[in-house]
Length: 114
Ligand SMILES: [Zn+2]
Image (cartoon, rainbow, N blue to C red; front, side, top):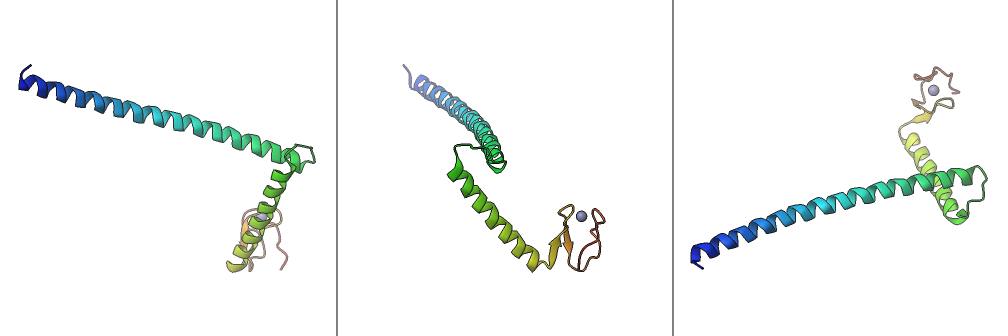
């Protein structure tokens, strides 16, 4: 085999390797995208279980659901602090963020207690 043939063969191998890498990248991306789909379904399952827990159904996941409930309380506290800093409050009717000076909710028109 001539030197030139060797060079051609080497070049061809490189091209095949390149194709393999593209194919590997594509397959990995597909696998990750399918894993994302599973994660989305996991989330839906979790939300349905938590909703059932909040409705008083025995789910078998009491500890985990209580953890979520605690986190939700913490988020509520943080949101309250945020509203306080922004000098705002939530409309009791629609939940819109309203400045404390507003007499009425600009979104739903509910009269706000001052
Ligand atoms: Zn409102």
